[in-house]
Image 1 (cartoon, one colour):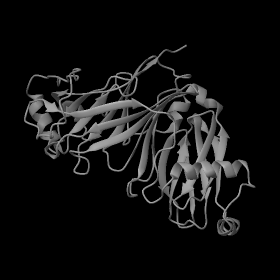
Image 2 (tube, rainbow, N blue to C red):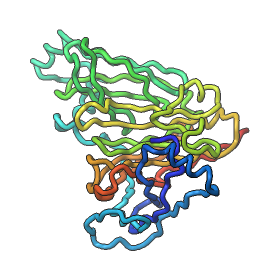
Image 3 (cartoon, rainbow, N blue to C red):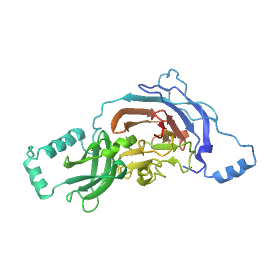
Image 4 (cartoon, rainbow, N blue to C red):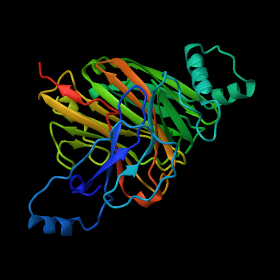
Length: 353
């Protein structure tokens, strides 16, 4: 994202949006130019003007038209934006292993009851090379996870927590240490390898009662990003929190602002990834509004196809919602542009007590 991204928003209405449960509107951001400096110089001699951003109107969606190239200054027909309510369940399997949800439940059952039956060969492997997971509470309602799996060196592993899933890769010794936002005060984490072996751990995170957390998670190359604009900030201001300026947790621990946690290894094929924005709602020092949005960059990997994701919200220790998101991306002629998906996440209204 260039530094002048806020100036490059194109006033294009997105027609044809359908949704369930919550309103969703979108705008398309003009593709990024690498000659921003030249444009800024030209703008300096012209009267300043703000880009117009139009929200989508609620209109009936025509029968699945074929995506067309984006004409200059014309309306882009966006297909099928859909937000639906879902129960909190473990997502589908990792791409190379089936029945992931069932395997995770098996790991939880075995952690609770070490006498639970296992295949004899699996039991021998487990005895010779156990998988262990520990969870320790940390500042800002975070949890430090430590995985030790010496027989799973440089192996893919998925972590499950309250409906959130992300995939990682162990190191050359089968170890991994992560800092993960808790989504429940009594937090249970499950790590599962592709053959179904794994471990679980739990931690009590009482400080979660002071935090509001918004999660967007997906699998594969969707181009999705979670953005927070704090207290009226614009793009690339100090109050713009996203993957490239995530901030340190110490900012939230002091009540000065939020931070973003990026979970998952994007280098893995069909990786499960998550962005988590955390704000210290209960200890904030300043009143105001936090604007939250989800953006999807149109890329060669996602143009003209449907992308899916899940949106999770937790506030002051209470699980709020879990929704599925389905969006058909614009045609490949729009590669480089950004689709702004508004109202997927409620803005935060901060009142200092």
